[in-house]
Image (tube, rainbow, N blue to C red; front, side, top):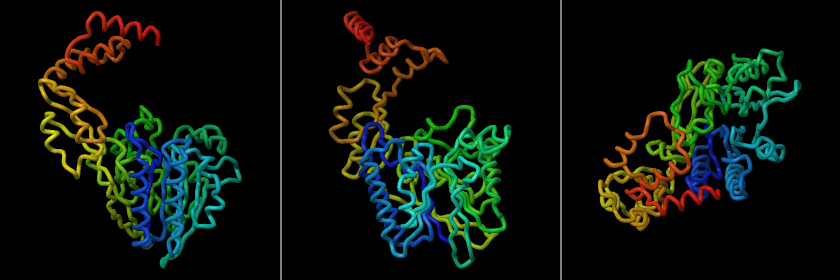
Length: 383
């Protein structure tokens, strides 16, 4: 059985202040085109369909167009999707019964009542049945009422209890879709800036991979860089687009999985996805960075670090003449490094005035004068 494994579409996401709608439409069109060519037996989308719990109208339209393209393929390909932590369960669940008529199966909420269970979809290939278990994002509090007191104490015990409750026959081929933060004996997967905000400090949301290792394939979402967790058959596929500068060197792709006979190793491959615009860094003097601009890279999303010792005149304005999607502008020279060294370690309690004073010094290369100090103090007082 051939599987397309996707996750973390984050439709509606912005990169800094830039709308990514056009880029997301393009990459989803590429995925639909590859599905038409490769004809996988099933497509898995493992959470964070949308970037916000209340998606914009544009985000709904983009996702609707994607589903229509998939539903229009011949032969029709089943699509299995689960909710992630960014998704609003009830909104994602809307019209799920209608979608199932087009073989689009949605699981947005974990079981809430004793009679409820995980959504299970059974598909067949030449080797027989494959059971797909759809496990949406959960917190311990979502499922604690289903079990005796003391059974569910953290994220790991919650997932373990929910799976044990399904009485899974591991003598058959089973695939799990899950959107959680899995680790290997405390060793965390590689993360990047775009998902750091949703990973709990201190590892409270960690789930040891041993909880799911008996599945024949575990299709994971939540982490934005493609990677396995301990075993090749337990895998994060990553995002289809770069959603932070820290993903500059990621090679985004569709993860393809070939599931053979029970007991055989799964085969993992990737199909590259090509963005309209790259996300990358530029570092050097202003003149060096301006000289590197060309028609192929000038529309990329660019994080710029200037290294000029003498700060040039209006650098951002000069850069914007050749790069039209500047994400941020940083200065790294002897003066800014000395300022950083002067800051006491661990002092993160600057007052608003102190913070603005430091910012002004960094941007202008000189301190505020008395009149500017008074003006800023008056503004802060009004705020």
